[in-house]
Image (cartoon, rainbow, N blue to C red; front, side, top):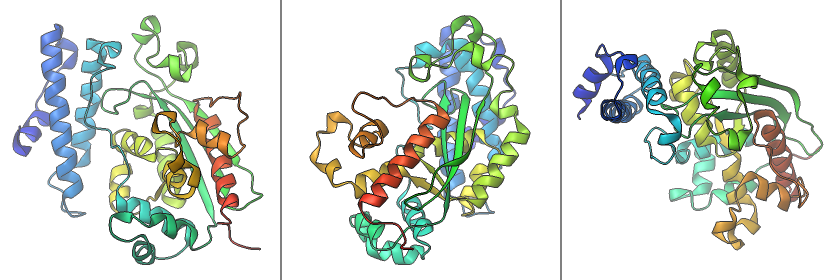
Length: 323
């Protein structure tokens, strides 16, 4: 499939609800996801304001693909890889995040970080951090944002200072198709969210007032998440206006997992299979979680844990502004 064919497929009048047999559903899903991958790449690579099509085209196709996945069966797709989830933030995003926390130019941070960001750990610690940051965490029904739904979002704010406390926390649940009342909420073994939590809730894609409020907040404060590429990928396809604002440089995303990997010297000494950059593991090393405690895997709880762990790490490395 080339870009022209991807656009043609995205604009074709198809009715996912009419597809029934496994072969047809599988073929349609694969075409959808190949088209989404091509369209995303083309849209992101085009100069701002000169994109060959509206981002709405991609979101519309992703919305249709979720219906196909629902009909095929979410549980049957769990072990199949998709293409719409970024594994990490770009180097430019990582530099921008450090620059935002340190209130200095991206050029200065980039110069310190060096080619391929091999010295970004130096850049993290050579200037103090300060300012307000917005933490977010989402829970979803799938790994891939063009297959599943956002069902829970937690957010709160914290000043980057040694004695600050997270504040103005908020959590919200969002609905999913009624078929999951009988089938059960996908990935509930991880996030423990049940149909009772979601019954009667508006789906995230339809929650226009909440979307507008989120986008306004994201444009005002840097947003921090652990493994932020996950939240970033999901918000790109689910939050109207997010992709456009990100591309315009209006939204700064900070990955606390990268902070762990670059700033915590213990990270490099621990075995890979112990998942040393996982939030729970990092929180235990910084004394935020006791040895017998576990990460909750629920939006607001995880944001709170992330903020406290980042605060402990910054304090350990003397990274806060004095005064």
